[in-house]
Length: 235
Image (cartoon, rainbow, N blue to C red; front, side, top):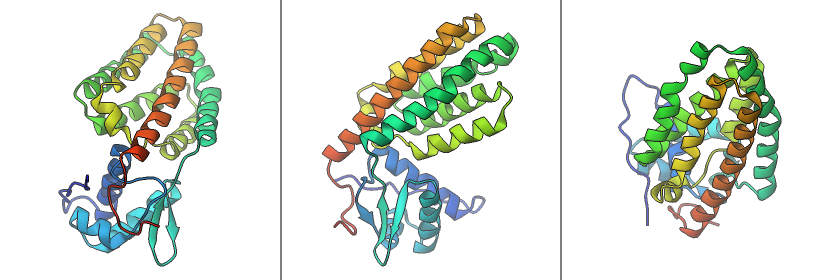
């Protein structure tokens, strides 16, 4: 039975933020299961901290739609349905595909090439089976690419969508190497943008988001099949 890994909490960073990061990592790895209720004291014991920062961190995750408070019991990990996955993908496609086309027409080669290290970092992280590094680089790449269109509100909307559509249970998919293909799509997209091939870049982004949709579903299914990581508050 997997357990949350104790985290090294530094005095320089607020406990609440570090605990929230640790809990997001547990969600991604499939160590916390959607639909299961976890108590703050139990999670605190797993992480080696007091219950207060865990409760505070869980409230942050609740605002992101990742968990919901259950009175006198703890927090339930939010379940995502197939409809949720389809709707997140639809919204991101409506926003990101045409924005990529606009970036292809307006951004300079120099601006686009500043994203090259991030695209390579995504691939390297996938090859090294480092899911957290993969997601962090992926997050930065997408938002920095969209930012080249010059609309900060658009970037904020996509950032919020990405938080709400966290890739639950990616640990098992990562171990099989399935993230590498998705990672390489970032390099392909960047190559098309640098070449000024806007329509092909739009198609690449559309296919990439569809690929991510499949990973969401498969990661969720694998997490459900693995069984509960913690027994705290299971209904």
